[in-house]
Image (tube, rainbow, N blue to C red; front, side, top):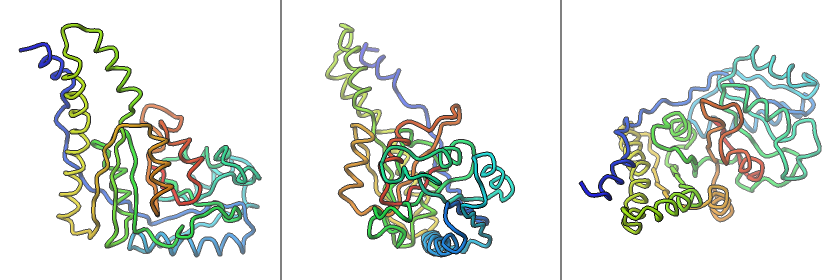
Length: 286
């Protein structure tokens, strides 16, 4: 076996399990606001219409939390524990004026994302005026982002659940170009390895894993006759820059991303800066 073959074998992906569709079932939803009761109820009706149209299913039970019902994160987490929602809906900078600036998510949303197990639908702030015209009107174009797409059945299942019939779901995997270049620089200093061939082999292998998994997702979802079209997007670049470019140039209705890894409490990877800056459309954070 040549040195290049040995190098390739080191990076050869392990056999991946095929995608398994596990739809996101929403029997209980909880909307968290800082509004007065009447305003919160009106917002709930709008959000309910959006969710039920996107998922094609009714949500039997709703809890609407007005601003007067909590004063700190402990009380808010207590409401979550009491309601045990399958989906939490909230917006950035609850009980704060910081929504005027793309600087943070605010302490209440941070806690909901990091200390609860329920998916969180982050909607544009109702008073900000920066929501896209199509925001909360339909869910025809959904984008699921991750840098670890293979075997991420929960994220893909949630994204597919929220793609309305006849809609388009793009499964996106962006490899970090900076990290790739750093490893290639190290490999170039090993004289036994042909750097150009190694670059091509490694890049192809990094593309192959997510490409095979997306094919698996497409096959399973087609067999289930969900009536949604699956698109693949596999690129090298900067996660934040690439997704900002996509969202600024395409009318995406919903962006789906992972909130945190299983082995960490803090928000996963590029999810936080994207969640802070992508304020014009809903984000489903798993």
